[in-house]
Image 1 (spheres, rainbow, N blue to C red):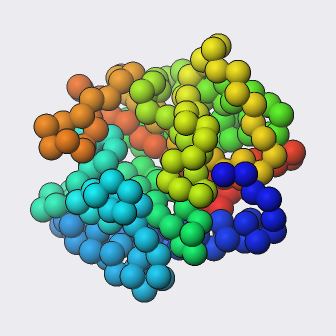
Image 2: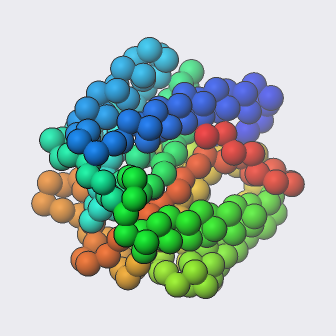
Length: 245
């Protein structure tokens, strides 16, 4: 989506607040003993109360209003009976539509006190996200974002997942551009446009550089690695990007 009016900007901000509120409430409720299905039911009620639409359900027929991934799960974790434990690495991913504007957001965090490596990973992911965010300016190459993400993650002592990417969003869950890579792709000559709406989501890893799909047909995981993510929907401008989530 390319923002064309102030109404578009406000519409995206309104949708962003709905999804961010759901994300933040689920993060607050993700305490030891809570199950992921209990968290997802909270999200379902919040979607209903806001008059918003869950993207995973409406777009893909996903078995949950949100994706909740724990420890070895990287993304698209199915809400279920799994109990959250002290020290778990949890990712809450919330996407959907409000008044026909689509946004996508997610956050990884450690529940309570956990392995110092996981705490370091989450902090490094925030640093990496900010480095990539600074490259979002109208007229700049999309590949510059990936270069900054990959470089920063390595400087922090970690790797990036290469087969998960950010993407365009706004008029649907998946708009152009199709991919915002988390590494430098010299063949990607796409330029960022003023008003372009992007779901930016670097995935930072302790070891792995690729994910694979589990037998349930949804959950994405790695072999012997932890992965953290931060995702926000942003609007590209000639100056600093506008974060709507």
